[in-house]
Length: 236
Image 1 (cartoon, rainbow, N blue to C red):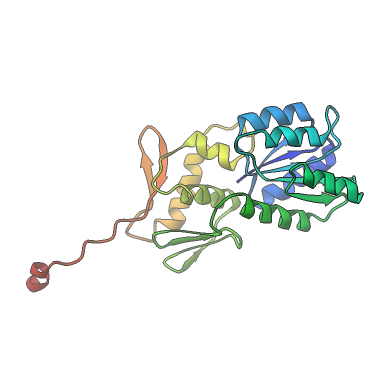
Image 2: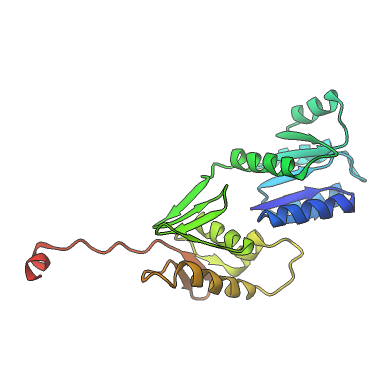
């Protein structure tokens, strides 16, 4: 999942980016309203964390721009304005939640996860065939056997499991799992796919991750074996 942090203070930018990336999210950062507006209209975000005191515009003005989009993500305001009136105004202008600075990161993360669950009709548990991914506890099993994944591996697998049977290009995977500043080649995806195959496919005869020539990769449940016919039963 992809989160936009709109915050002009570099120290808080870095703190939020590191924490959210460690939690498995792709994070973009904007230090002013103009940059944030450009990103919001060019990228699909699952959540926006918004400071109200930006150098070039009031955060509520940016909030209005977000809400003017046909499809807009949930917005968590993060602000030093702690008066009740400020919080009420932020919520009345369309924010989904309001957290006052200074804040504990664990609380911000809990609120962000709650908004991500509320903002999208996405299940907390994904299953494709016998492969199960718990989005909240960040656990993966196949055939009941636990599988340990690194954060980026988990992010790629989650994206693929949300799009089963759909060919995903390397660029699509990079854009959903890495942040906007990632300037590596998309062949890094091939490296992580090899890692994933080693963990979720190698031990099972039926493979789930498939290469789509000329496009990228696709995750699909293995076909169930056809039921035995009467003739075949008699032959045995």
